[in-house]
Image 1 (cartoon, rainbow, N blue to C red):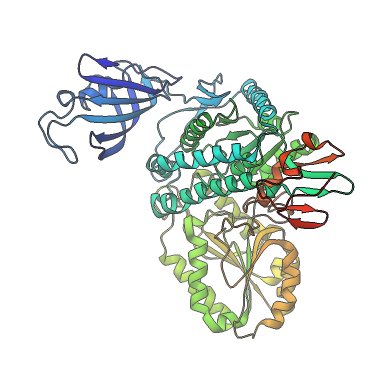
Image 2: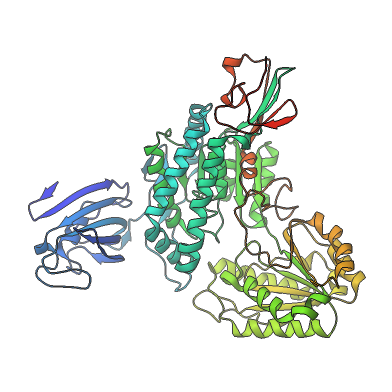
Length: 637
């Protein structure tokens, strides 16, 4: 419509929350561009409608919007800057805006609860409890309240997801690939908006971390999952032509995905690796947002919803809830309609969910805690001490140490070069800035972890003090303990201190170092630095058989922080790193099989078989036919 004042309004998304009316204080996200397409700015604005703090066209254009809504505005010059030039805007310019309404505050009462995505539409929650995110760099609450969903909403989401699962069962991989690729494109189209929101909610650097590394990784793994879904070999189609028995992996049903706090894009419940794998395997997803970055989850779910509509996915194929009670979380993972759950987070919460799922016989794939031991052998220190100290410091302090693959335990053999190494790392820790932590919970958890380690006998080399950085932070902390003491208290001294810290264990001799390896819990990774000239080969040959069964990924002469999205990657490991050592959360196609069941067809008529198991193989999938891997057609019954 075109208002008489020269204001053109187009509602892109009609919100479900409170209405913006004159006199109300509103918070908006706003992008502006000129007629020729040049963007001149984007911002987050809070203002009272009627106070004329913004240009008239923008202020009037917000009136009537509901929280969660998105509106496009075309503003004539007399409602903008008239004949004045401002940075990026020439005189007498017609301006275009896209505005998203985040909150409305009226007579002192905030009416800003964000909508959730259920059954193919954005709508207000029936819940009465809410929460908000906090900027960890400033400590300030961020605009917008998010609902805690009651059990009735979760049941509805499950029912709708189950209906969607029944509708898509039997669809070709091409359908799911088209959705995943459309979703990746929409994420890229909203890069600036997503990065700005994630930066505010996590304090992770906008560039290079979020924009140049994590977001491209996210869209890349969505496209890898699409390629796997389209090609089909991930399903391991197997044909015995003589017996006319055929099998393949197929979808399980609705998958719930609980994302962590430290990767707002790449492990988000609405976009991360578990999401991509579940969808590529043919399953609807109920994404559970993380309380630290609900706004980021909302933006991702908006893009996913748009992609689902564009590719004709059924309502409820992708749904988003922000938070549940602990009891309802346990009920969700054990519900009869749930197919499986993917969870990344703390060990305590994950084990509660696992117990509930196990009692109901439901699959749950967990990524829990890991201290990722690194053994630095004597010859390596003699050869390149300074280089290893640099590698370790970079890895340990990257992102304030908030990586599941952070090197939280280093094992060394006593000697002069080891003391030099400890001193070199301590100096680097003292000089390096303390990064901003994701939230106060991480800071408190670090303090508890340090207290447990010290009580078990560890000594502080440097750090162990809250603060020291911007916002929520903790000084870079290095602790040490003797190998003898570690062997006396192995469980307590493997307490995870998630953040910018590490524990050095100094073994008296080779035998003690090997005993330490034998007492390690399961970890995602384990690494060994050794002399490249062969001086440590004898000790390595004795160490490797002890370390290998205790880690999912074994590294040589490199730190564990990076997790490449490679078909050969294993981002998993023995308990307590994960709940099952046979599966990976990263690496396609293997990650898809977590969310699939083995389907066998015995004597089934050819016209009733899934396309992947028919004699013809038009898609060229690799299949095991009569004991031989081939892309050729089968000569069967």
